[in-house]
Figure 1 (cartoon, helix red, strand yellow):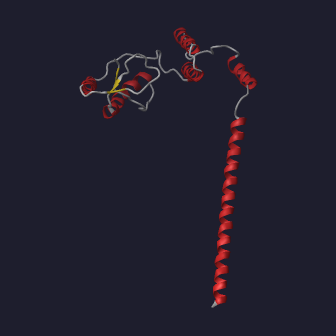
Figure 2 (tube, one colour; figure 1 turned 90 degrees about the horizontal axis):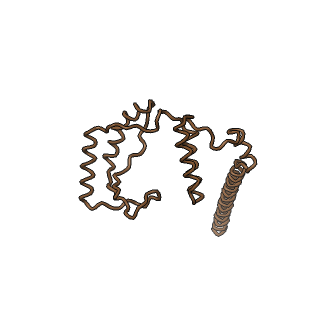
Figure 3 (tube, helix red, strand yellow; figure 1 turned 120 degrees about the vertical axis):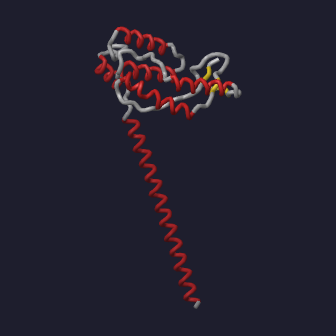
Length: 200
C-alpha cells in the first residue's frame, strides 16, 4: 500500500512537472513568435520608407520637378481653383493639418478622376423629401436641441445645433442616389448622410 501511494505520488509529481515543462515550452514558443512578428514588422516598416534622396528622385521622375503638377482635367478653370486651394494650404500653421490638407488637395487635383465638366451641379430635391426635412427641422428646434460637438473647421461664437435624424437621413441617401448617378454617369453607393446641423 505504501509503495503504491509512493508510486502514485511520484507519478503525479512527474505529470505535474511534465505539464509545467509543456506550459513553459508553449510560453517560450509564443514569446518567440511575438518577437519574430515584431521584428518582421519593424523591418518592413523601416524598409518601406523612402529617404529624402529617393523621394526626390521619384518626384522628378513622375513630375519632372514641376510644382504644382498638372491637374486633372487640365483646364484653365480647374487649374485656377486648385492653385488657389494649394495657396490656402501653404498658410495652414499646424504641420499635421497642413500635411492632411496637402493630401486632400492632391487627391482632388491629381489622383482622383473628374467625372463631370464641373465639380458641382444645381437641381431641385424631391418636394416630398424637402417637406419631411422641414418638418423634422421645426420639430427639432421646438425641442431644445443640443449643441453640435466641436468641429475644428466651424468658426463663430455660437456652435451649431444638432438634430438627430438617422431614419430620414437614410431616406435622403436612397432618394438622391439616382439623381447623383445621372449627374456623374456612373453607379454610386450611399456612404454618409449627416444632420440635421443648424447654423446660428
